[in-house]
Image (cartoon, rainbow, N blue to C red; front, side, top):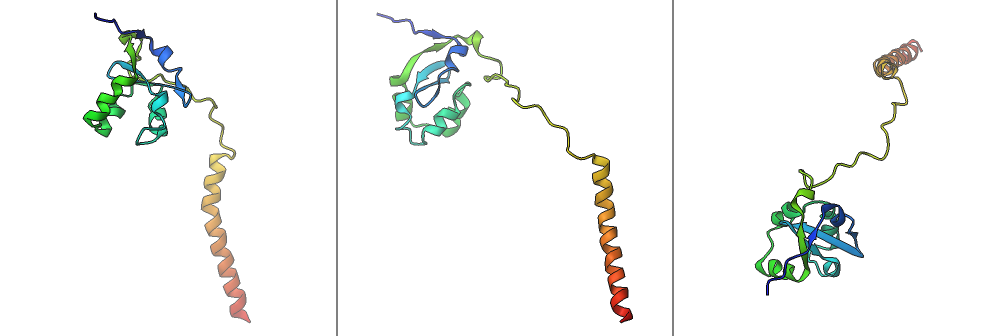
Length: 134
């Protein structure tokens, strides 16, 4: 009896991204690793950092053992709909804050950077002259 795996959409997979509900996408397969977070040898932060994207590269870079790959079967919940995955594997999210203007005029800052050393040098010569006269 062949059971067809459940097909998940990428937008649904990325919603599962915290300690209470964590899904990973690896090699086109979806894994619910929520119950594995505390057991993961690298810590739960490693798994949580791999959410919201295709974590295949992250998984391969570590070089998991055969036992680890066998253990993955326990957490398998289905496959991903390939057309739903963005080309980069991760959606671009624009920054939540807008860039701010510099507080100071760049021209004024450059002039200050140029004139401050000259002012210090002038003060040093004036002090030397005053001390030398005494």
